[in-house]
Length: 169
Image (cartoon, rainbow, N blue to C red):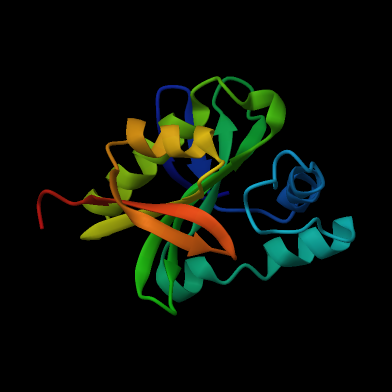
């Protein structure tokens, strides 16, 4: 298990095969994927295969990471950075179990991911996208000091684009 970073309450680590269980259940909650453009996995095997074949760590040296509670090692969700190769931008993303919403975990993990991206990966700018209706994700981006860039169409839905720049670049 490779831990990438730690915060006061959380640690973020690379995915492991058993995380397929969590991806399966996260994506099978319609409320969790409501604003993501993703669909549910058809089976636990499909979710586990997704995790086993997750290419971003080897291809780019970073990716989305499992977010776990230090106190119990419980898997809460995921957060991290993703290179959107088609547009050559680094995207911040996060998804948590619904029963973990409103506890500040998304903001804590997102802030740590941004800091890691700037300090360890020397990324110049990180983007965040959210459907206009997804007020909670927009709130997280704002709490992490992302600035509004423009309204966009994302996954055929009205959305917003935010960004944060590395002040060392």
